[in-house]
Image (cartoon, rainbow, N blue to C red):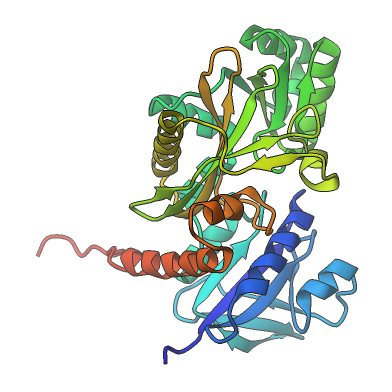
Length: 369
């Protein structure tokens, strides 16, 4: 019998998607077979403090974390160990084989945690530093998509400094992108936090200011009038596969945070009502976007389809997509023949395989001999 894999699960985090992360982690932990895995949960508070102990998820749900203790990883190779901070000492409390970061948004999905795990030289689920950082930043992602001929909507990237310096000039630049409606978005956030649909100049000013609360980089993008919203899951490393597409019918004016998490009026249609040619085209584009940012493990690629013209645009890529049982990524793979528990198993296996491949890279050079 194979020895059990020791999984270190990271959840919570310094992000507007804190609650989403806890819900995703809850669903994943529920399907990890105890005959195959030993799981150690680490909750990261909104202030960035790492905590572990008994019943971490319940403690974070209730906000009663006093019984948990501070923990950390050391940022250098050689020990896949979680340490407790006890007084002035670090004491090892468990070892692990692979890290599963279930951290949506900033300080988790953006390459920061991935950088720590690379320094520690440990296997981890999902994209590396490059794929995570590029996938997270909507402005940079769209620029790269244009370079590889993936269709995206016209957009403008501005900084908080520029907004505070000359808002009138930024408004003029934004209105030159497209007719209204326009969307304003923080460049580095997910779950539609800080996203506004702007129908006029007053909306645009408010939307820019709101997005700038959550990021110093703000995206202004052409809006479509009630587009179809299609999402496709991608799974794999060097030879990724695309799932069947799912379609979201938002209960709100667009697929806002409220429509995603606070009410149940939105509908998910899996598979989406598309013809075979459309499905193949979108699957090919999803894989191309995944490979262009050097993604690994998993991602969800989101599309907008203009109803009058049928034109397809990539909206964004999520390198750590929502992972609750009702989230699109696992449901799309379920419709494609990969059940939720098997999907989690595959992601852990992909992480271990990618670490084997990374270990083939030499990091020293002794010069000519």
